[in-house]
Image (cartoon, rainbow, N blue to C red):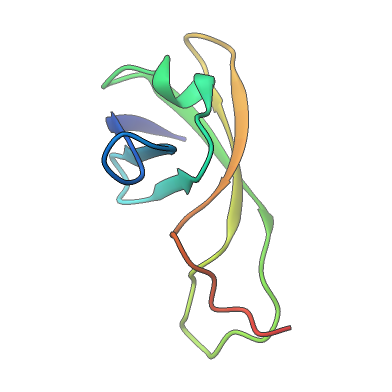
Length: 88
């Protein structure tokens, strides 16, 4: 469980990006309505759903999380960085 710290665009005016109060991020090249309909302070449940293979120890890029905004009840899946560490 965490809360929304900020909502924005992945790069300029494309895609989606969301930052959480616990320091986590999610980004996507596509516009995700659930992200853009979220507001600062909304409570969100984050669940890790996928870890890329082939990452060096300690490299947590590219992990997929499912998020559910508890105010809007919208859910979405996105990765925690713009690039994955996975090689396989």
